[in-house]
Amino acid sequence: MGSDKLLFIEDLHKYYGKHHVLKGVNLAVNEGESVVIIGPSGSGKSTLLRCINLLVKPDKGRIVFDNEEITTGKIDVRRVREKIGFVFQHFNLFLHLTAIENVMLGLIKVKNYPREKARRIAEEALLSVGITEELWNKYPAQLSGGQQQRVAIARAIAMEPKLLLFDEPTSALDPELIGEVLKVMEKLANEGRTMIVVTHEIGFALKAADRVVFFDDGKIIEEGSPEQVILNPKTERARRFLFSIRELYRLE
Amino acid sequence: MGFAEEIVYLVSTYGVSLFNAMLLTLEITSIGFTLGVLLGLPISLGRVYGPLPLKALLAAYIELIRGTPMIVQLFFIYYALPLVGIKLDAFTASIIAIGLNSAAYQAEYFRMAFGAVPREQWEAALSIGLSKWSTITNVIIPQGVRIAIPALTNELIYLLKYSSIAYFVTVPETVYVSKVIGAKTLLHIQIYTITAVFYILVAVVLTKSAKKLEERVSIPGLVVKGRI
Ligand SMILES: Nc1ncnc2c1ncn2[C@@H]1O[C@H](COP(=O)(O)OP(=O)(O)OP(=O)(O)O)[C@@H](O)[C@H]1O
Ligand SMILES: [Mg+2]
Image: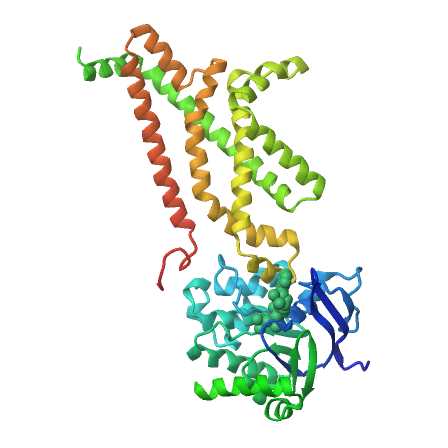
């Protein structure tokens, strides 16, 4: 395990009752790398991301993050989560807080920054995702889906995480709003942030990913460069799935 | 004398004692309710998020309160506690009984309200590294309390009427004084009409104020359908 490995997952298993959801996942992510995970619904992609930031407790296997095994009992879960940003499919902004307060909450309550400093960082983060001043004091319900998701991204990056996890960040968005979110994510990838993105946006994968992982039935069954996995998959399963996705895109 | 004149007579003759009685009713209600919030909120938190023994203890408390008539609880506090050396005047005993009773109900309303906060709000808070407690105070309580307002309004109006149990330990609140005046003047229907109007008026004012409060603290864009 080299020191440039930020994340190292080894033989990870998760059961929901008798349902074996993760069946031995092995994945290593380098510092600065952006990895796209593609795979059919129900294959366990969200579960994998949730295991990484310990929202879900894996049943077997190891996760080493930032040179520290986080799957032992002794770990300070909060400190790990603080270092991992999570962007949800349905944004999950705090409903009772304005855009800027959403970004500030973690800075104040987790990082213990004074209000002024938190506000400065939050403003910067919001601007970097294209949320301009007139939107800062809007509540989530007053923002479009694309704006909400960008605020959610700002909330994640303001904490200066070492790793960003995206769980289908654009699949709850109207088609015309997907672009603005993908653009922000591309920018983050180009800045050299380490990120794992679960998405079916193969255009994004081809443009911004360093590596694509095809996930099926609780396991990684194929991985490689975006061109190779998306345009030229080796396994029959991946070929079929990607074919159906490509058809879908052509139709749009 | 006609009905209206009799009412005028009652008000002009007994106005001051009626007024004081009504004031007492409002005092018992508001202090009892406040006590109920101050106890009910922590009880609900302990019951939902506390360690197992605490959960069980608080659940038992709620069952005990809900399973016995409020009047029995009041008699217990007023007549039984002096046996162990705790002697309370009737007014204080009434407030404590109502507060303890209301706390159990309010705890349940808060519990339901916290349960109605979407699970995703928890996940979002935990994912940025907030602790469980910090999530509760910064996310769950602010959203849950808003959800609880209508139920708490009902509880307050309920208490307004049930504060009259203080009558049974001779607190000169509205019902007690009305009864005394009724017995003295034999104008029963007339005096209880005045009393009823009082309760209705207060209930209407409370309902309207609660609606205002609810609107004031409502989250912009969330309750009102459509974009602003
Ligand atoms: N909390 C849970 N309790 C029980 N079963 C769950 C839970 N979460 C997920 N599952 C099950 O685990 C399996 C994998 O779910 P997961 O959400 O990880 O899949 P996914 O690949 O993200 O799918 P999708 O593309 O639909 O989001 C599914 O069969 C799902 O029903
Ligand atoms: Mg999923």
